[in-house]
Image (cartoon, rainbow, N blue to C red; front, top):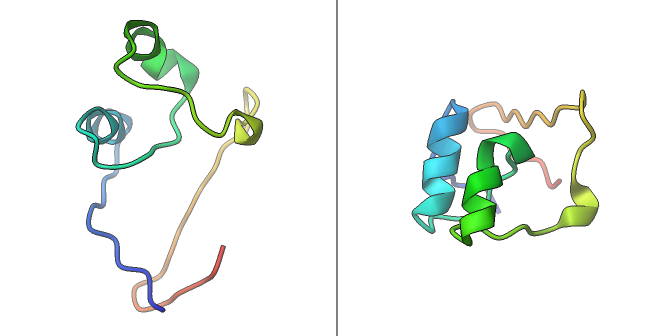
Length: 69
């Protein structure tokens, strides 16, 4: 089954705004959402998959290509 993204963004603030708008889940650095978490606007999910400081997660998918991650 091909993956069909309904939203594509290239920026931390847009990912955060999308999560705040209940569009879906997002992987964001703690510093970017600390206030949102404290207020309860966002909740932390999948903490066991958090990256360490200095690590990055990059997801790239070529147009027309599907990979089952």
